[in-house]
Amino acid sequence: MKIYFAGSIRGGREDADLYMQIIEILSNYGEVLTEHVGDPSLTSLGDDGPSDRFIHDRDVEWLKAADVLVAEVTQVSMGVGYEIGRAIEAGKPVLCLFRPDAGKNLSAMIAGCPDVKLVNYNEFSAIKKVIDTFLKRF
Amino acid sequence: MKIYFAGSIRGGREDADLYMQIIEILSNYGEVLTEHVGDPSLTSLGDDGPSDRFIHDRDVEWLKAADVLVAEVTQVSMGVGYEIGRAIEAGKPVLCLFRPDAGKNLSAMIAGCPDVKLVNYNEFSAIKKVIDTFLKRF
Image (cartoon, rainbow over all chains, first blue to last red; front, side):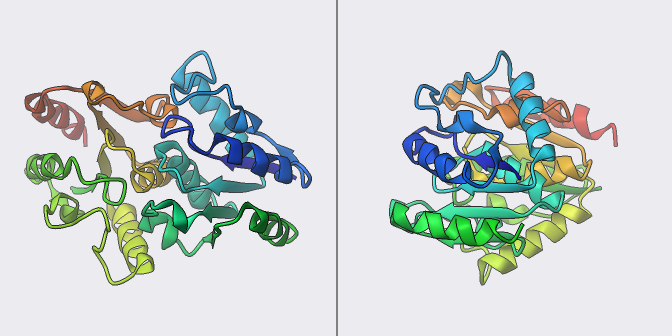
């Protein structure tokens, strides 16, 4: 299984450690195409490629190749929203993980999308079961 | 012409007045389906509908009906990213307006998307010509 993990880069790297831990769990189920999203050395300058065009085209190619998209949506990010929008429009399964306790208002476009499986969580320990339940369907 | 204007709601309402002025310009070219995005009484709680599902489905219906999408992308917003992603995947023309002076890092998924017409601006007075040039093609 090919998994596209989406997390904030230029929207802010406050959750980078969390992304790395989620990617570690996901890698038990298949190939995580976007492992760099959890790289602690990657800053909000978002220099994960030689140009914006390169980054976009590489990520969209991965998105098209992916069987599922898993996103951590607590940190507000234009790129994560874009990736979810493209995945939904293309009919791919999408799991979104959100921490209500973080004090952010989740977009109605994510919270209200009937094709998104949205799971609220507060403890990291809850994620493993959520991911297992979601991915074992595929 | 039906125009979908996208601006941040739950991502932050700092640019609400600007959205209203852009909508005013756009309304000279056609019907702006999302006029409420410029409503100064709409806060970042995003209560522009009875439920998230209602908001999502109404906005996606408008997006599907729209001939073009115009977005102000300076304020980081998951919903604006989602709308741009769906519009691009569906093959609709997209114009994005960004203010480099505002100190935000624009996502590579927007800045690097070859199907997005991205225009950087700093003075509001520049927008009228940008919109005219973009919309007169349709």
